[in-house]
Image 1 (cartoon, rainbow, N blue to C red):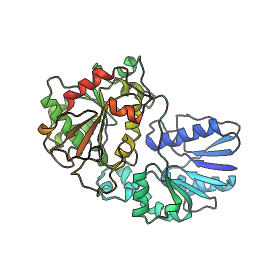
Image 2: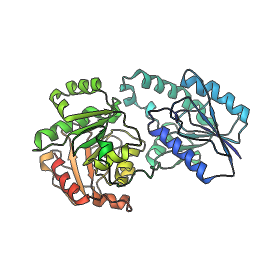
Image 3: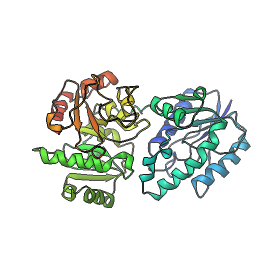
Image 4: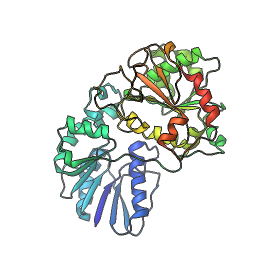
Length: 396
């Protein structure tokens, strides 16, 4: 069987979630399947992270823009190969072609109102492109794969899609993410502090960077010895603009802005962090929280969208979208006090509740080690007891 796979972005140096999902999927196929013949179509890039093998061929297609690459160069290249199957891995696909199509549709955030709040021109153009392409390619898809049951339900409902042609397959994580020693040298490339909190933040509104920094400012004010916050994927100017927006310009001295952190350094960063903040407002999966838990690191996460599904606390099926009165992550389903001063630590789960509705990401949960052992029983942080005790100081 001849299988063509679109992997346009896997060779770019600064890879993110969807790029790693495609790359790791291809690597697994390369190790496991020696019978079928694979044709991998990529864009140009400096990070040649995948090599050919006897039954796997890599073709790099040159094109000035992604839409031209996908709608002109890719279908022409696929037509020359004449595969039995074409798998497009990153939400969109050519609108024309004869090869049976499998599409990985990670999310339909581009159809949601909150996506329009993103001021990035690049993201805005990408949203318009997806809104034009996705409705046109879905009718010719033999199967659509998405990454969580939450997103599967969203796609079926929003696009009135045939339930028999869509399935949820959860993402995984690389085995590099595990408890480890000897991480100090890697961490020193980004900060000198012996202890820190870690946050993956950028300017996309769904990542909730202003709300997270506002909550962090409150933690700094209430803590006797606050830990610095290591922030990835956020530049100096955007960070200062956000701090001015939330009225916390003096918080800059507590932030360690690392910029883009290569995936190879992330296991060390997770391992040394006292806690990882994953306070997004909307995710179709959320690989970083899985990576952090695999490293044995406590995770502060939001009880919204697919995040509880991945963190190990299935969402209440009867909870309406946008209802913030009950935390989806709470096992006992009790209502959570609105004021942080009324919170009391409970075994296995501690809640950190913001004062304003979306500003502090609603209800956030600290996933502590005893809860993580239920989700990932083979992983355990070497220093779980001291770090769990230290988490008591982080609750505001």
